[in-house]
Length: 318
Image 1 (cartoon, helix red, strand yellow):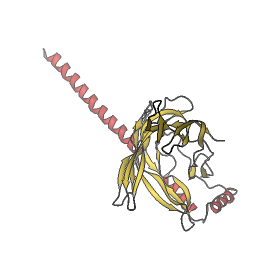
Image 2 (image 1 turned 120 degrees about the horizontal axis):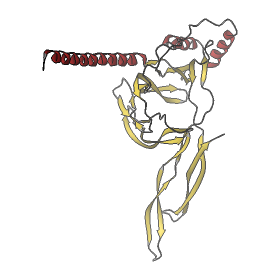
Image 3 (image 1 turned 180 degrees about the vertical axis):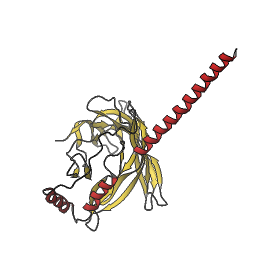
């Protein structure tokens, strides 16, 4: 190999090395930008009144996947303004009266925002805790977003990990993977990736042991759907030869899960931007109810005829 060939080979090696280094630098810079722009923002939810009668709102948080957007200060300002009033009704009345006057000037949101997590990623919670709030109706559990990160978008419906911290900052603090279902983007119209099989985990508490439901498997289902729920009974069977046998009878009675759209939950919107909600109401209970059923009859241990109904289908209640 002559000097010219050696020099050309050296240039090729140097070019490849610099290209790799610059590529890694750009990738690292993009990853840094993703982590910075995928952040937790305040998201206040009104959940009711405490035992003194005062309104209670909790910052459950939200993950924002764009740089800029609604600032945390504006959301917290709405919550601080709300806390000055004795009830939600007084608060909404005050907002309605002031909205008739000159609207306060608000800075518009930037229009050139780009997805911070990239086209194949989504900004999702990476850590959540479950708080217990004492209300007039009793204790209520509220899930609160602690941190956010960029996660790869999934096109198939599968079970994904979902860590929840119970009894945070106490001697009984416990982290459990309760599981969840991926947000499948390839699902047909009207179908969602929802949990269909469940398990349970025990959490030790100062008063007793709590049973936490966990997700085991997910499937594509309509918004209101039936899942299996097995119950066992003892039944007496009389055979032709006169022998009486006691055996275990398994019946899948089923359950209805999912929810139906029940209206808008926004209690307070921005006067200048109706798309921005400063305060949300508590989620309404599901109206997914049994539609069809079938009966299962058998003779119980006392020689009496017993009938158990099982759900065959579910629908949204009008």
